[in-house]
Amino acid sequence: METILVGFSAMSFVYFVLLNGFYLALTALAWVDLRRKVWRRRYLGLDDVFASPLTPGISVIVPAYNEEVVIVESVRSLLALRYPRHEVVVVNDGSADATVQTLIEAFDMVPVRQAMREGIPTAEIRATYASRPHPGLLVLDKANAGRSDALNAGFNAARHPYVCMIDADSLLEPDALLRIAKPLLDQPGSVVAAGGTIRAANGCLIDHGQVLDVRLPRSRLATIQSLEYIRAFLIARVGWGRVHALGLISGAFGIFDRSLLQTVGGLWTDTVGEDLELTLRLHRYLRDRGEPYEVVFVDDAVCWTEVPEDLTTLGRQRRRWQRGLWEALLRHRAMIGNPRYGVIGLLTMIYFAVFEFLSPIFALLGLLVTLGLWLTGGVGSGYLASFVAVSLLLGIVLSTAALVLEEVSFGTYKRRRDVLRLLAYTLLENVGYRQLHHVWRLLGFVDIARGKTEWGAQKRQGLARPVGGAD
Image (cartoon, rainbow, N blue to C red):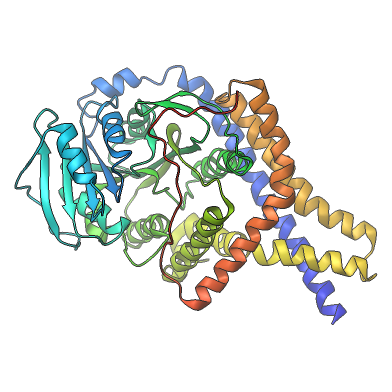
């Protein structure tokens, strides 16, 4: 038995070496890419994007379920976005509160007969409303069928060639659409999807749908997630994008070619990882047909969103993400390691399967087994120290590198104490929180075995009113 455990520990050690090698490579790629873009941002030409007749129209699709408290401010901020041709389509997904009536009263909306495409099947559309003072605002009132179905209804109603997905309680920076649309002009006809950066809004000073002052949240859990998001978007997404291997456009903020979405059938409604599944499906569809295309990441197009501040909600979210990853991998398993899909099949899909999906097994159980072997004399102190170095210390180094890259490239957090707090949390994130995160993902395996399909309730505080962070 000890031989088996030692073998598993050694396998986990090799796993960590390979995993951190991946992260180091992504960090190097992100560093090169972001440092190059620091100079380009000075000459970004957003005014040219705004003025260009070639800038495509974008339909912003907002699924809403029981959002009467936040929906008006959310819509006002979206209507005020700096973009030459955009519309806002709110899809009420059978809310039990006064979401629709609140919108009708706030924006002087009247019933209309809206021409709807029949390309993507959805639940019944009960009514459609248009705003008299705001011709770029449309509200669909439909039967409840979930977020993906609501977005599909919005895709059918959209009038512009690109659609943008965003949640009702998230906030786009005023020029976010201009920034995320710039690759559409730089690479005309080739970009089918683009994703932006997601940042944690907890603790920020927010008023009238705008982030007035960026601050870290008081909550330790939300602060750790702020660091997680920095690493996930400014290291992982930038790095993958650098080698044209971006496998995920976040459903929290991304734009897609509407006609292509119609062709592939929109979002699948029977998965909890609909954004990952859709991104992989687009790659698969286009590569199967040999069509040239680009899926890009735009690091300076920013969306602010609320992150969970309690362990129950966060744990439920991470268990759901694990299930969503499994569902996407299962449906697109033919892509894993398949050279037909180029770098997506040979690199991205293998990474998702081995270093994302299986990571809690090796990361948590490998560490526990190694500690147990050390306590019983199965391995020496030198081996334990090496294991801890590759499993924990390198994680701290990578988190610190992500924070340094963020400060050098963007300087989002202006207060020195906020930066120092984030630096301290590089330790807390990797020792304690990371292990708890792996426990949640192991529980995700249990959910998969049980066939669990529902999202589960999400506890939110809301970002509609001014919120102050720690002084």
